[in-house]
Image 1 (cartoon, one colour):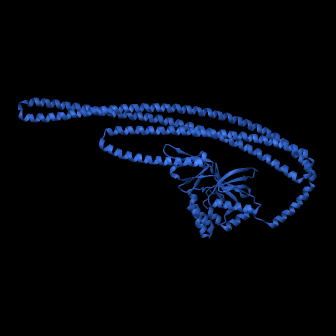
Image 2 (spheres, helix red, strand yellow):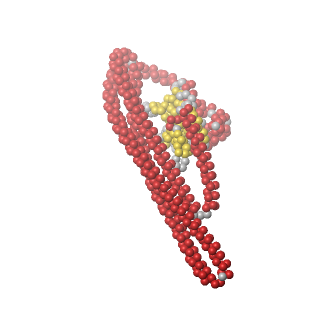
Image 3 (cartoon, helix red, strand yellow):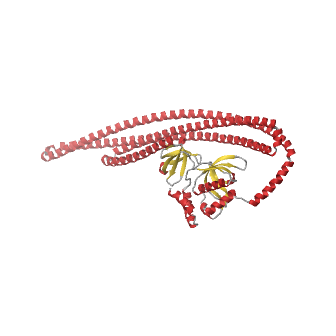
Length: 572
């Protein structure tokens, strides 16, 4: 890794003595030219001051527009709150209706069970009478041998018995048909209930999608308002920077126009106060949005609870159907098999409930002690969550953890079977923030080391980046690599280590992904103002395979230090 580090250092803060000497001569000539233009500076300053006043008026007008947009957003938020209350009332009515329907089905099920038991008793009585008749028939046969004179009478009695047997068989068939009719009616009612429950679920899903789309619209409008605010601030900063440069070039002019500068400072303070007020209003609006989002989360939990009740009801109906089927077949054999199966199902359910309860306790303990939680998955990659947005989520067919993931800035759900470990963190970052002063050798060296470590060990980074439009923004970057020389590539970059060791990279630029942007973006290292690494091994299964390939490449190239660093990440 030594040769690669030297190349990066040269790209970040390389020194060229001859170029600096030429630059010094140019600066002296430029200084002479500036002194000749000293007399014209006063006129330029006055012109700039007029432009500043006009710009201030323009900013005031734009502030009024922003205030109007804020009021419109506030009205939309109140509308969303009213719609949320209506949705809650609808859910409450549907829940009560479902409960009444469930009670009605339970009563009908109990009634049918009683009818089935009554029919079984009738059949048992008929079987007992049949046995009695069979015994009487045997007695008559014995008497026939000894009492020939009573043969005709016995024949008549046997004929009557046979007719009675036919009648009993007819009654038995009628009872069987009645049981089949009861079963069909029961299945028809079950299908009707299933269709009704499906319709209710579709209604809930549609209402949930409408609500999410409205929240996304509010979020987009907030983002647009924030961008307008950042543009206003950046234009003001550029104007202040120009005024400071004029002050350094002509100190005499600053003394002569001291009174004008004092007025300028007063107006600047007034403008700063207006900007601070606007910032507070934006913060208040963001808090209102977050509150609405939390209420949406609570409403989603209520819907999930209702879905769980629906699932439990389906299980109850299925159990009743199985009991009815068993009564028509061989009772003893089926009941034995049913008992064994039920025991296994109860054991599996109890095990899963214990795991779920244990995870819930662990989550509660971590969220009370730490502000951040790091989750390691079974394949080895890690995610960072805010404790206040971290919870156990249960669905119809699965359950796991869910929360606001810091690196990607989105709500991320991980199924419980994919969770290997959860641990609390006081900070999501690996060390202090580094100020990137590329004119200082020690600072540039620290930045190069930190970037190289983040790229090789798959650590996302957070930077303050000064873009080509003069704006400075805070960005989370992940799947970071030195910019490949090829134009078409995807992230995580599969040739990361091969290109680094072969010097097939642009050491002055980074390529990475940003939250809410699926396409790779490029960043000039010299334009990074601050840097800090996230305390997470953030990659994919393909990225881990690339890391293993990097270990072999480093060993073959005798880059022992790089191989050891990569191997430690795999072992951990």
